[in-house]
Length: 64
Image (spheres, one colour):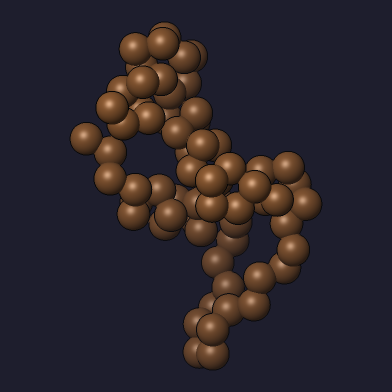
């Protein structure tokens, strides 16, 4: 079962936010706690704001 369905079945108030926090915790737990270290962007890329990076990561997570 995917995390979004699980949170929906558990009647979480905001299941999408819960999934976002889960993904952030799995991929970058230091960012979830507000202790993020500055990231350096690969050559030629512009660093993205934190929220945009989270959205980009979420777009890569298969949710059925």
